[in-house]
Image (cartoon, rainbow, N blue to C red; front, side, top):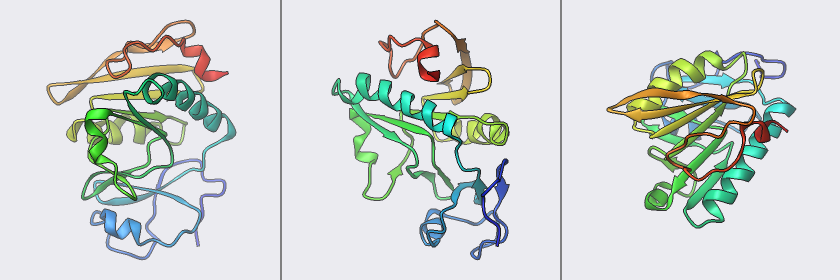
Amino acid sequence: MTTNEGLSVVTPADWVPGPRQGSWTYDDYAALPDDGQRYEIVNGVLLMTPAPTPNHQSISGWLTYYLMMHIQLAGRGRVFPGPVDVELGPKDVFEPDVVVLLNAHLHKVGPKRIIGAPDLVVEIASPGTATLDRISKYEVYARYGVPEYWIVKPTDRTIEVMILENGEYYSAGIFRAEQVLPSRIVPELPVCVEQFFL
């Protein structure tokens, strides 16, 4: 039996009993026993992802804290720290590190998962998840119409802001240190990038 203890890269979970790879759906995923592992489905392929590091969790905590202050406490929507299941489509189920839904889209919150595109997803990339975050998830998030996608790189202490226009993402830039993020979803966020990396 393979586990993600010591797993440093995203890997197809070919050993998990279930449908053939490429055919996994949310229902198959939801039926998995709780084995303590982290799974996502991309284009019907069940993937196992590495356990987050303490630094990853610290960054996730700060992102959640500041977004809670400027979204949820301001009455503009809700912030969900990971892990939370986001079913973008029948064969695409992700667990973003942080998810934001504005008030107009809170109907997407179900009892067990968010169904449909959030307004903002944040992924904290590690060397083992960088390709998944920057290529595979990037394409799927764009296909399902996620308006804004942040890619956080702890090793560089940077955040790239991706904005969806005409069905494709363009990079609004890679931000660091004392710069603030030019977010359309959280336009008034007065937080320097370095504050997410304390």
